Length: 188
Image (cartoon, rainbow, N blue to C red; front, side, top):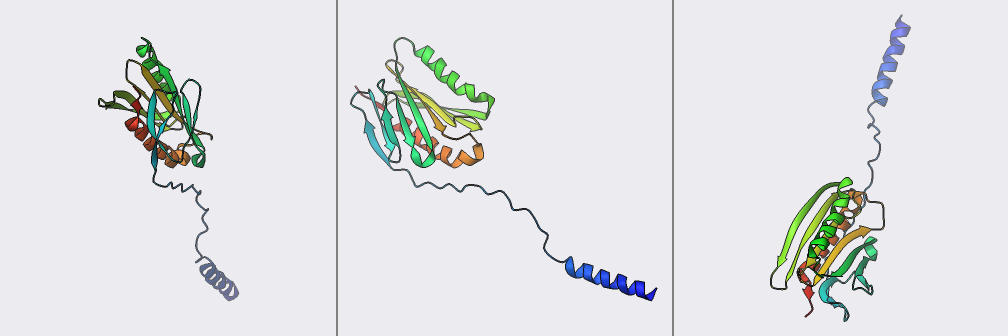
């Protein structure tokens, strides 16, 4: 009996000594810490197109024959697609198409917030859409003078959308879109 108590006491002491270690926990998932420099803007115009705007110096612009353009952001693996269409008594149709394009993302989006844009001085009117969630496009917009010109724009990344991962880049490009909208002027 004394022998049994002795072994129990030794086992108890060993248990206390070896159980005081830190608990082993799995490592948390790592996340990207994307950090971008403050944007620097420069005036941008095409001799053949009826509009001009300020663009981020990190963006590479590629125009198409119809004055549509792609502003590529190689550092972010994304692009802002601009589509130009002349207004020819079809403003209502163009507005419906622009809104339809945005609301096609409602299936994957958590929320779509609309922001009206009005610049009477330059005759630029439009809407900015902030799309939250795993939608293909995080931001979209349209601008028009309502009589001659109509431009739509959408951000797309060359990756499968994961809202948390692309959020820093999407926020950076949202700021660029707003700056583009605010600086856009129609040529006379």
